[in-house]
Image (cartoon, rainbow over all chains, first blue to last red; front, side, top):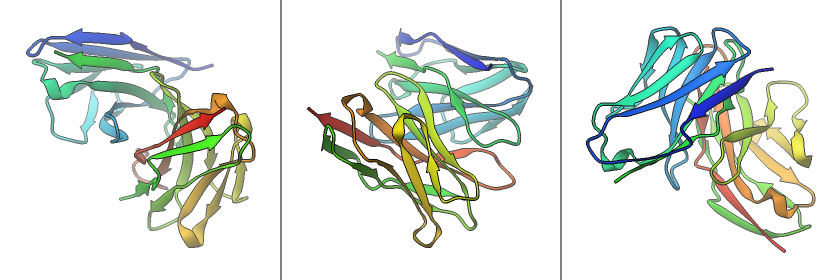
Length: 112
Length: 114
């Protein structure tokens, strides 16, 4: 069966510090991968998605970037965090050609 | 591009009462439709999905949803709510063909009173 791992679960970082959140998927190959951010009352905002290694699409301009160095690894990064980067970040995977997405447990990021 | 509206931000029901959460979508053709549930501090879990065929779909935890093309709706229902159903519920829509991204509504928070 497929599983998705996302870490860390919680993170408190000072403004201006770098960020690296990691997501890995097991039990499947060549998945679509997604990073969402969830802010209170705003639902899920799609940040990045990837259909293959090195292929990243950005949905909204922002202070974050994403990379996919391996088939089942998706990393969300920032060089300098802003207060507005605080939120709940969710990674998700999807079989290519299918529609339902499966989510990780999320990372609660607080920028102080 | 597709979009989703969940008109109710917060709903409160009593345990044992029936539940209906509303979802309206905008898309030029028949979309793929989903309901997800999120417990506090957790990821999203798929409750049910509609791709084609029977417009009444059954999901996990006793939930069902009905696709109504004429109303562009995909409302989630449960005949008798349990306290453990308290969570946030998200409706999502996917396009047929092309991009496989899912677009989510803003969610409905469900509170269950004893």
